[in-house]
Image (cartoon, rainbow, N blue to C red; front, side, top):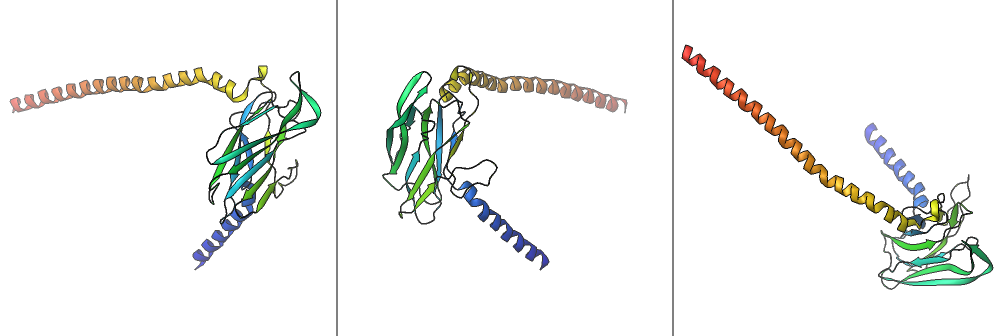
Length: 244
């Protein structure tokens, strides 16, 4: 009885922990594919989980920061979604890498033309962005998630350092230190990593061949030793029989 009660209490405690921790991860978030270095370009994914059991996510609106405007923001085409990119004139033009920018992407909207994100699933919405600002450590993208039952979840609260995460946190993209030459994020990393990948593939391909050669040699030596022992044993047995 005591063991069963302890198990029941443990199960309830585990359920409570999951219930309390659910809001911490079940919200719209943004992460780079690789790095998001200041002054460079990056591909970022807006990850959208469906939090409802009886409705699908049918629309996502991501508002881009106007305090650190991005000259370029290009979403990847996605089957099952219509995409609209909204550009707006800035109240005050900004200078990015020697060029004055008076217009920037301020919102991207994805609208499902099918089922959208059904209960129990999530989807990633990739966007190529840049050039990333050099005078901030993060970018905040306020997002609005709409469900098929017309319910709206507003992920617009800006997390504050040293404080608990808000109930409806906005997606925040952390920027890494600027790279030499302001390399273009994913493109540069792909070019840089290609020779390394080839070398890695070559070494990986070579490893089985080297190991097989070594194995064959070891087996050959072992075979010779065993054969020699067998011959010696046969001679010894023959001698004992002759002596007898």
